[in-house]
Image (cartoon, rainbow, N blue to C red; front, side):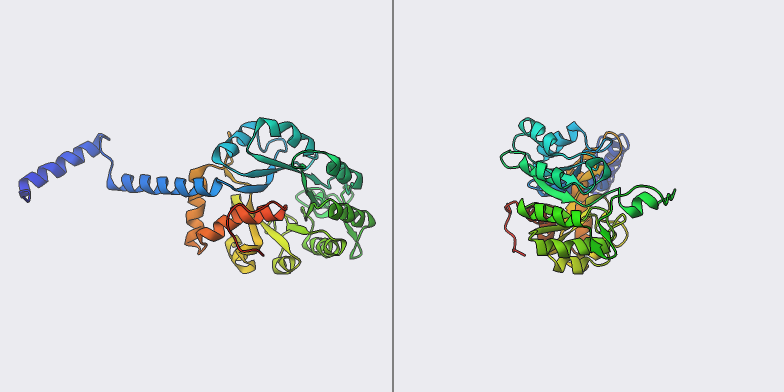
Length: 322
């Protein structure tokens, strides 16, 4: 039977009183909780099997507990990057402590690593493991001429790592490309200017390098307006998860095509303590990406399939080949 008006009024007033003392959630709170729960579920699904090719272990970046967070979230693989030290030895130390989490390594051509250090790349190739740890060699990142001699306090005499002169790659870079090709490593552009990145990509393909990455393609000194041209070389275009929603980066992804792009650096909270791969944060990110027209499949591609392909790992989820 229908309630009388007086009884309905009494129940409404009683419910309002419960809300006032916090014993009953408002419809808004219920909806917000449901939405948050749904986002967390989406985020958890995206993190399971994700591959991050830019997991910083420089001082002040990732910490031991963040590796545990990655494993707990079901992340498939992390490639450890340090601007100032090679990471293969660290990977070999950490692997036994994180079974089930694939850890890989790289080498950055910065001054502390000997610049364009061909023997350093050869040494990374010589380190045995199952699988072998070395995967990526980056051109200079932080020690480019533009970074060393520009910025807020320009110093025209600051040392830097050069990769080209007069529009030609330096001989040591060409020697490094031969070693990268021989060991089936991926070449990444680091922070070099786009012109040097494209020059290196062109030479790398000629030398037999199979995989290329345009690092931080929308950021830093290497801010690249030639992403489509890089993609024609077969380069994967990297976007940072942490700032993909800023400015026009989603338009850039759409312009070059999600099938050529991947996301990295899944820091969902940057304050201390830093949180990595938080499901709610990733879910909120996914919801915003969907509002901008990206499908679930495209997100799966950029979180999982494409970064795996970029270092030669098998794809764990169905996806059209490039």
